[in-house]
Amino acid sequence: MQITEIYKSIQGESTHAGLPCVFVRLTGCNLRCSWCDSEYTFTGGRRMALEEVLKEVERLSPGGGLVEITGGEPMLQEREVVPLMKHLLDAGYQVLLETSGERPLARVPKQVIKIVDVKCPHSGEPDTFALANVEALQPHDELKFVLTDRTDYEFARDFVLKHALAERVHAILFSPAFEKGASGSRDTSHCLLDPHELAQWILDDNVPARLSLQIHKLIWDPAAKGV
Ligand code: SF4
Image 1 (cartoon, rainbow, N blue to C red):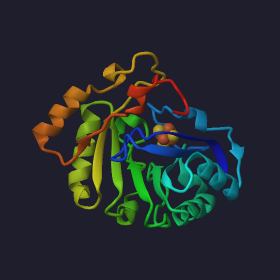
Image 2: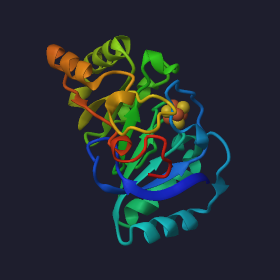
Image 3: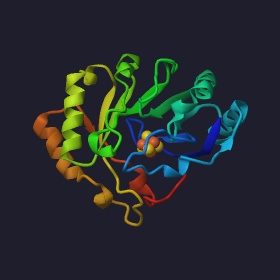
Image 4: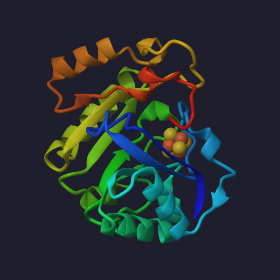
């Protein structure tokens, strides 16, 4: 499979935020989100055999722990990434899969925790989540909505309620988009939507969502890669 990088860091998002995690970042994406902070994954990388990836994960986190398969869009390499996820599970790892949900998710092993990033109107990639994937969601999965403004928030709120998603998954995450190319200050000033404002909207509407901040961008320089 084509890999951009494999590294160990603190998980920055989802309900697993704060935990040590090995990231296996696959190369290539078929979307072009306006706020994407992973454009360096669109091209390049290097071919790695399944055994080579497993060995590197084992070196970084011997004997188990948390592994996130991410990208880019990892499901573009489904033929190779599904066996990788199975081997990681068999080896005792807890596996997260970060995906846009644009590709079919039915063949993802059931024990994998899917973090599905449903694209909102101002991502530049609206309506890309495949609705058929709702049926592939497991009770331990999580749905993430990255928000830039009130329009995005209302889309996410209405989408969650319309498809009764809070009853289907473990967590609904509403995350303010982060300014692309931000560097320097490690605080929420780079958020395109003020978390304070988002918090108030969630409270006003009593939405069953949790406000999620990308804590890796509050720990390290927002421009840092491989953290
Ligand atoms: S799906 Fe992810 S990697 Fe692809 S463009 Fe959007 S944010 Fe970037």
